[in-house]
Length: 220
Image 1: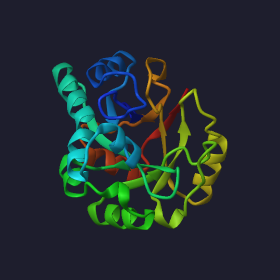
Image 2 (image 1 turned 180 degrees about the vertical axis):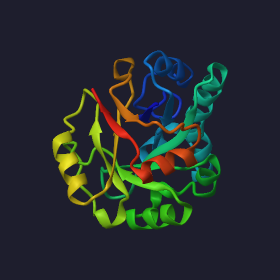
Image 3 (image 1 turned 90 degrees about the vertical axis):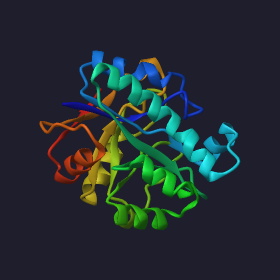
Image 4 (image 1 turned 30 degrees about the vertical axis):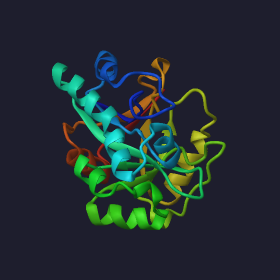
């Protein structure tokens, strides 16, 4: 089972240009068995959304996932919820796996936390926190003490991700590794992900697969 671990929708990520309703079919046709919608959750996305409160922004953020899930349900294709958070004072991005709509609605201010605060919250809620593309040109590897892992392969073709360095760093600190297409445009379909023999149809199952290490990374 191939799973896309990093995808953005036009409904919730201002930098994405593909409607959420199209994405499940694109990945089903590419031979994938599920997709994780990881729309941006950050101050700049909130400003672009027009949401004046964190609570209103949380609802805006969920639009992409909800639209994609409805489309996926129609064709029998699992769509899971994730997030790519950006925190104050740093350009770094962090992927959250194992989250639910309830978690987002209960913690709409997660993009205002420090990395330590977010990591502590994720540990409490059994959510995995991975740094996205840690060696991308504008990023800096974060303190591994506050991470479960890292995206050691990012397939987005429009960025210098330095995936080799990301993999070395992940291995050095024995972190959970992930791979994702960082889907924003049609050309980004199936540029990364993971493959596992374990059926994954919800976020709990995804969490367990990542924790177990029973998967391999897909690279383009």
